[in-house]
Image (cartoon, rainbow, N blue to C red):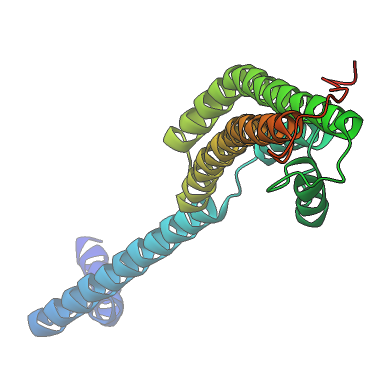
Length: 242
């Protein structure tokens, strides 16, 4: 019985031996090292591609911010302020701002000399109109000054908004647009200063012209009173239409 059992065990082991030899794995060290290096290089390439995609995504985000438009514009307020001042100048009475009309009225009301054919009544009417022109020019200048003062508050608000938006701009386009509007505000203020200077200079020029015309009228009245010097002839002198 013992011999039989031993024989059966040996036969079983003999039958299983080829299968065990077939499942044995033989490791090649050089091949394993090469596979590890290849896997490491592949992983490095994948990481590089990931970083490249991340950089491209960041670049696209930066470009989007740089191209974002500023959702604020002070242009309408600036134009409205200029239009209000221009309207005051346009409504100003007295000597016209139109060049051709101004030259015609100036030649009539501010002559180089009064001739003998000019009546006393006409000279009085001209003097009255010259005084009115000077008064209206001063009134227009003061209106423009008042409008400039009223614009200060609006300019301060616009300046504050533009500076805040420029400092908080998300990209280059928003910063550039805010800067352009700041320059527009500065230009509008410069134009307003020119408008004010024009009205003030006009009032001063008309007053000086009025004084010159007064002197010429006085010279003509004196000449008529004195006559030609040969003989004194009493005449009725009309001062200012009275």
